[in-house]
Length: 288
Figure 1: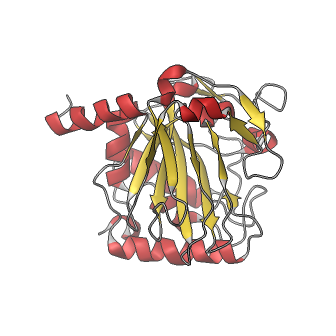
Figure 2 (figure 1 turned 45 degrees about the vertical axis):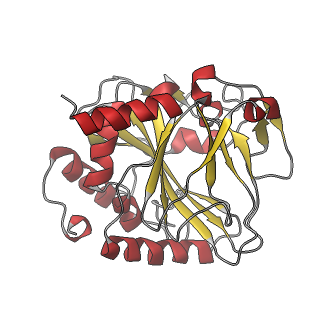
């Protein structure tokens, strides 16, 4: 049963489509995450870096990525919040690093994640976005159109010179209430698959770096058959087919979810995810 405070924040998430909980990463874990992600960013050409939790040896991995970044977003405090929002059975299916450099960081178009994700039903999926160095309006924090998720999936046009290459029609944004997600380092926001969100360019003298993890209810289906013809916008569709996913809480409730594809060479990730799921001690990474 939800506590009174849990009901309150779950209701807020349902009302707005996003939530900024009181959670803040412990200082020692935050410092480690900052150092690890800085290493990944140094080796990357783009602001959006997929799969920082996968090592360079993995076909979908990145230079400097790996297990410790994976561990960061499986913090017990984060999973506790997710259990209240999407239920006790949870799959981690993706991660990303968003690095808007000072002065030159680009704009992120207004979009809905459900437009891109190969999950059915996609309503069960969400993103946890953690600020590594603080985010506000000046350095291009994420902004949400509050309540826009209740209007369903909106048409997305195309923008060739922006990060996401497609954008919700501006009328959907103008008619809504835009709220910035101002976060201290180590704070998180959680947003659902249908809420409209974007970010302005970073014209400040400070970087704006976010580490994000995508989760879904284990009653949903991660459908690897969804490719360029069936995912609107075609962003990363081929990578979705080979991406490893992990059960990190409770039990798998959909028999077609595949927890084998893409796991070659990821035994340490698999063992850590199982420790998290079973409640076994997970070692140094989870000790505050």
